Image 1 (spheres, one colour):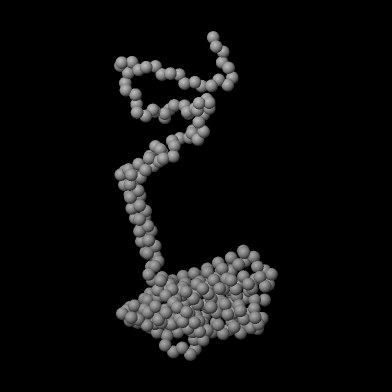
Image 2: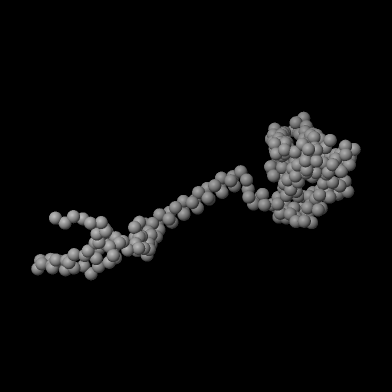
Length: 309
């Protein structure tokens, strides 16, 4: 018996001749389960893919067949339709509470309108015509009517106020992310509370007007403009400058609020019965307008006094 030796080389044995009843040989030899080929030196052939099918082989063909499969295409189309339906449902639910088209109206501004509105907010005493203009029962956009409320100036003024508050706190060596976040959240919460109280009062008094939630947020957010000038006056001229600018901006904002809401609240008469109630409703509307205007200086002082020392 021959003993195995180290370095034994594999040899190819001659195949036996096919018998008379043997099937015809295949044109291509099946090597899917066979061992890796070896060269004439008895070693494995380099470059052989031990992990799977060669590039361009049955693996790629399976991927192509997956995309070419009608069932896979139908499943992809069904998934896409479900995604579109979900998107439509989400947009419909959002539109129930927030009208995107109406929200775009409050941001339809230009640079000319912004400059005129800022001058109107700080110097409203010389302005004569406060009535909002309409075109075919539709109010004109802010860029065409300076009396129209907008949300662009309140939004930009809020961001500017937060940045200015950070500068003021940094000058006084009191800056920290927590304090700045508290200033931002407090300023935003006060506006939400003011709008909520306003809506509640209008609902209790059954005041039917064309004021929307966006209108109230716009009129309430204009106070950020006065807050910016107040903080700047305090930083540049000290406590005396702070008091002067606070007085001027508060009076200007009160005058602006009264004249702007007068057309929308006082002129909207609800269907009251005859008697004392009919004469009391206009008086209550006047009280709401004046109280809203008188509340602005208190909020301005509350949100700016701690920034100027």
